[in-house]
Image (cartoon, rainbow, N blue to C red; front, side):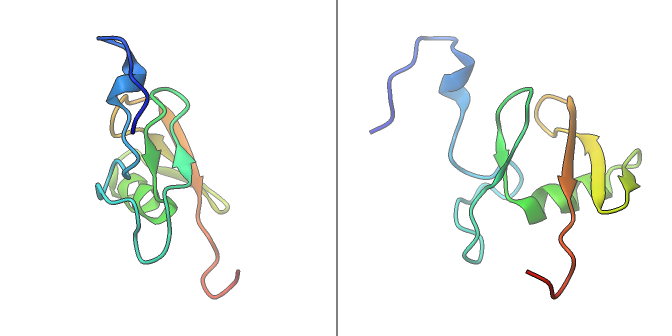
Length: 85
């Protein structure tokens, strides 16, 4: 059972699902990125796809920068090299 929260507590709005695809388990991966502003969690691949779709998205080497889809604060994610783990 989830822990009780006070009415209006922002922590009560959190969910364990990805903020982009609304799923917890996405092809065997779980949300591993979180916004520093609102604490919403995201799958790395979902956040990367979201940020790359933004018109003001910027990339430096393997890091993509943009804004959180929930609170509009700056957020970034590292793009994993394909084929390497």
